[in-house]
Image 1: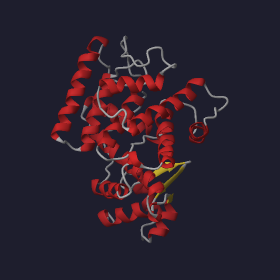
Image 2 (image 1 turned 180 degrees about the horizontal axis):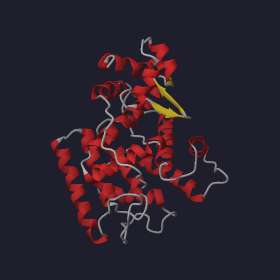
Image 3 (image 1 turned 45 degrees about the horizontal axis):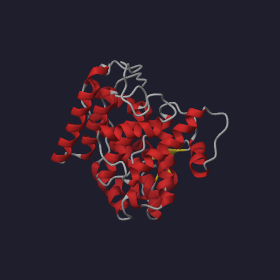
Length: 312
């Protein structure tokens, strides 16, 4: 993990916008019941994103080729290919509901699935002390891992019983797991799969954390070590907005189609300028997703933003 700067100013996504987008998605059914083609697209984006922020060299197009055709990609490390294939398999277990709990066993099973044949300690808690490169935070010593994981598991169960806010709960759970850093390698990828389990169990889609979000994501985790998880919760809300419009592009109406900002602006009929909309996307207020080096949003997202926020 590489942290260059810590900033505690959180970008804010209006929860009403998230709920409206979620309602549009749920009108089409839950993610677990979506068509195979839709799930394949979700697997591709999620697998590419989570691996790329950890240094995997495969591009989005190459991950698409590997997952859709099963063909290998030349001139890449074998590890990068195995991570892609095996993460996709682990994600399928999560979406199918075969791995559905937030606990120590799920973490071990997911780690083993992703890193079998890659790490000699796949599916095992670390036996050595570790440091997080670039961070001021030091993970607990190895002898404390099991007791801390048990507390982490119990804390999550307690939050579930109290029905705490889904995003605050996700941030607490994810930060808690990453702060323990229970594996010698692969903590982030397992932790992000646990995040998706949490959201799926609460009728939200898979959450995608993409390479462009890497610094903001790591910054939010670093802030949580020394303050609280509020910044991480805000980051997750923005990431979820991106995840929702990506799903809706595949299962929604014509108004949910992802377009360039200018195209979406014209279709929506808004009087907002393209510059204004681009700024709101970058500030995390308007749902948007960056694919193939271009920001995209939907007319529906713009219209929901206009109805809820107006010109601020």
